[in-house]
Length: 224
Image (cartoon, rainbow, N blue to C red; front, side, top):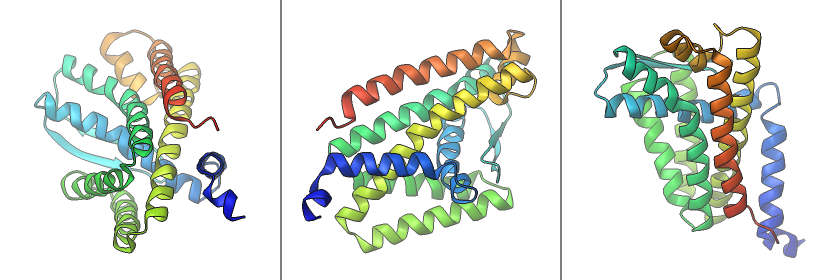
């Protein structure tokens, strides 16, 4: 048993499988999937800040969806709408890179600081506030305990959740765009701005995610 616990590859894939199953569970699944939603919305927020566009608020909902309300002209709105899905996928890449290079503690700090900033500056709906406070409390508890094994496991959990959910959310968007192009989240916003069908944008998001995920697996998933 002690040898199994020391096998980092086995532990990694065990965590990956548990996360893959966990995101489909009725209550906890929606809770953990919101981690990727927050990262996704941060992609919109970050580009809004870089483009100098005012951010009115960010909402996180119990169905795992989110929205970033901004005030921006047409072209900037287009760029901001494009940012969410690639940013979440890129974040999973960075998370795995940090874990491989033993920066798990810093990634835990980064997610905690991001959550605090979101709570103070942007999140305004009650559910979003409560969820964010609970995530901050969990991370602060892990930081207070300051156990290397716990930190490593939690960082791997976050990396796996963001990786899996960023890919699944892009696929869900493709399904939504196929069923109703006007109700497909960011793809619908892009459709309204450019009059190019939502399916094309959904396919672009899926393609970008596949590209980033491929290199994430090749570079950072353990083989032995």
